Image 1 (cartoon, rainbow, N blue to C red):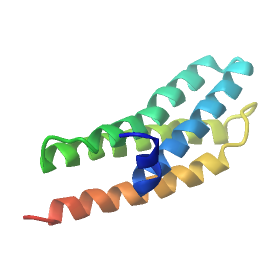
Image 2 (image 1 turned 60 degrees about the vertical axis):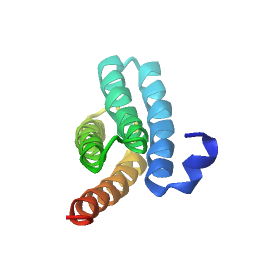
Image 3 (image 1 turned 90 degrees about the vertical axis):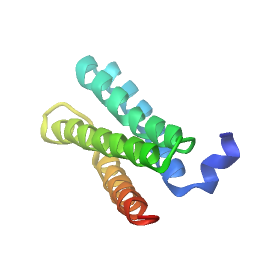
Amino acid sequence: MNDDKINENLIVKLSFEFSLMIIEFAEGLELKRKFVVANQLLKSGTSVGANIWEAQNAESKADFIHKMKISAKECDETKYWLLLCKHSTQYPNCDGLLEKIEVLQKVLNKIISTSKRIGN
């Protein structure tokens, strides 16, 4: 998959853009010496898109669904870390990221449910 494919697939585009935002947010946390949370957010937040990217070359429908479910779990974990940031003092505002993760979760859940129905 090349750069052109990012814009051709909604979930790939959303997750790629989200990953870039997470990288920027995590770098800001590191500047504030919030290393543990920055590392956790960087791992889970970029894993969402990495698994979606990998799902585009799934070996089967079941493999596709499995990879998308992993992405959904990574969304949940990322949301947890973002909520910790939101409700902790001395952390920057992350409301924009929380809004983006909500959209990602809705699209992912729709893709997973539709994929399960189609062809069964």
